[in-house]
Length: 157
Image (cartoon, rainbow, N blue to C red; front, top):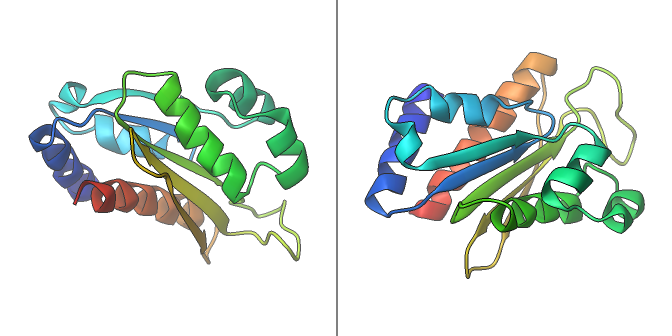
């Protein structure tokens, strides 16, 4: 994960992109991976860990309507998280992660391992990805963090 974070930061520096993260199920792992790289302060603005619905609403402006209608683990909420992070930071590109890491909390419609990602970039459409990861809680969270970093890198390329 550290090599991916370092490569992503190099691309961001070259393209003069400033990054922010807004994370739920990963609990700050994406921000931690980015800030573990020396010199990351040149392109990393901030990271939010918005684990609760209240935090998603208060910190990055996810609407109660989106949360109540679709649930925290959904495309509309992931997109709202990423776009809210753009509005509430100096970042020019953001990534959002929201999912169910387990072992409890899953349902037939939203199984354990379901994670929604969104990547917002100023003046461009927001990208969304949905994955269902297998494994235990730690493995799901790690896969989700790597996928978030990969989505940022894909967006830069």
